[in-house]
Amino acid sequence: MGKRMARVQGPLVAIAAIVAGSCRVSSQPDKSDWAQQRRAMVQEQLRGRDIRHEAVLKAMGKVPRHQFVPEAERALAYADQPLPIGHQQTISQPYIVAYMTQVVDPRPEQRVLEVGTGSGYQAAVLAEIVKEVYTIELLPELAKQAEKRLKKLSYRNIKVKASDGYLGWPDAGPFDSIVVTCGAEHVPEPLVKQLKPGGKMVIPVGKTLNTQWLRLITKGKDGQPTSRDLLPVRFVPLRRQSDLKKP
Ligand code: SAH
Image 1 (cartoon, rainbow, N blue to C red):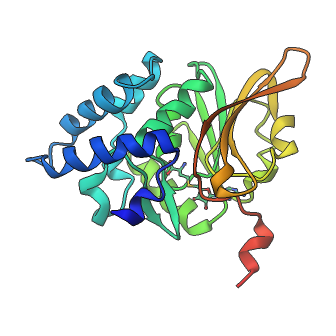
Image 2: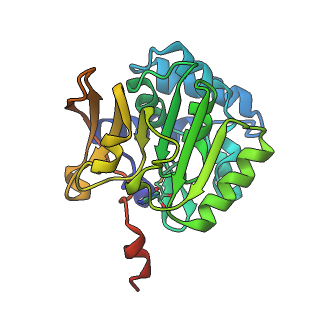
């Protein structure tokens, strides 16, 4: 348990996870009732905190999160915590996924870029709300798995690419919003460029894991970005293609 808690994003949320996550899961009598677990997750972890965006709440109530986690982690799929997805990567805590989606205020007609596909869960939540989702994953194996999973779940409005998301997806941009789900040391300039005027980007930024903050960048109609730090978080690092070759 101690090991899991260390991966929870954000100290405030970490405390809540100890109370809500562990108690509820251990007293859950019927683990196969995923829909019921999902409703409880939306009610307790999202509405019970500060998630108010109706489209986000609806999407979180619909996407089968248990299908995005490894078999061994399924019992905890709807718990208030991140979970390992292999390759030393994690699927974020449900609250963090909802929070990041809420702050970019997604709308049905929009096209959104995600950097850090991981399991594909955040992409699926976005795809329930917007017209098209483009998602980039650095690790080819994870990209392949996510693509297969999303296809099986009939998400036809998500395009997955295995490459370095630092560079964005220039051919598909500019985007109405960008959601980065790995922690960067600085905000990648190519991503700011690929944001439409009036668009929003949410990204964890920090030199170290202990000083990471979720930052919201809003591009003004004049093209000038402004930014605001929202919440302390802990995300796995954004790596570059060149980092993969290191031992
Ligand atoms: N959004 C995911 C969880 C993301 S974990 C989900 O819903 O499951 C962060 C992911 O970012 C990891 O899979 C990691 O491999 C990936 N990543 C790290 N650096 C990256 C980069 N430069 N470009 C794209 N993906 C990257």
